[in-house]
Amino acid sequence: KAGVTQTPRYLIKTRGQQVTLSCSPISGHRSVSWYQQTPGQGLQFLFEYFSETQRNKGNFPGRFSGRQFSNSRSEMNVSTLELGDSALYLCASSLNRALNTEAFFGQGTRLTVV
Amino acid sequence: AQRVTQPEKLLSVFKGAPVELKCNYSYSGSPELFWYVQYSRQRLQLLLRHISRESIKGFTADLNKGETSFHLKKPFAQEEDSAMYYCALSIKAAGNKLTFGGGTRVLVKP
Image: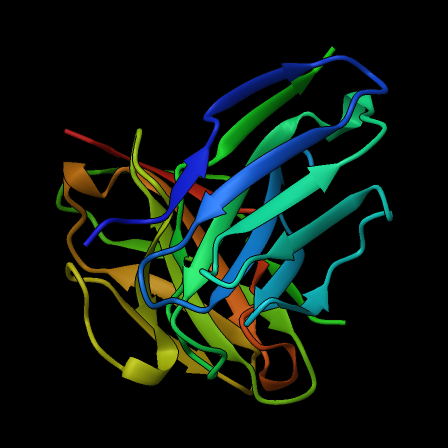
């Protein structure tokens, strides 16, 4: 079966702009989580969506938002981009929310803010 | 808040030598621990989870609640083990949220 698909793979944006990243989970998976990966901070949890509802949120400013559609596809949006938002953004899908459910990761979207 | 620490950023070993990646966590309850691996040009993927108590690709990891550690070990490293390894923790109240350590790069030399 197809893995987690993230689009686009690469993005270059200017400070102050906004950006939308997309994630298509594995078919049948209802949970989608987003992570930011940077050399300095490592992998940090942004938020999790399950059945179209945000279930958990990390310590990121309100400029970072997301949503999930009825087909479980998810988007995350970053408004008023800052240079520090440059990072690899990873999406992970899981079958459900039970403990120990394996997370399947996408290839990521590399965002560069100039 | 929970935290995961991987003290080594880089581990360099020769092929056939044992390798141990350290992982320590801080959480007062009973977390679930995972090791994720990222090979060159591949996506992050699950290597093993403590609840399975299984050996994957020769790797094992034991949860030591007294020392709050979940070290990853392999008795004989292979060149194909060269990769980035991340220890991660989840707790029941947080659903699928994973808290990751900083990662350890393993380089297995021939």
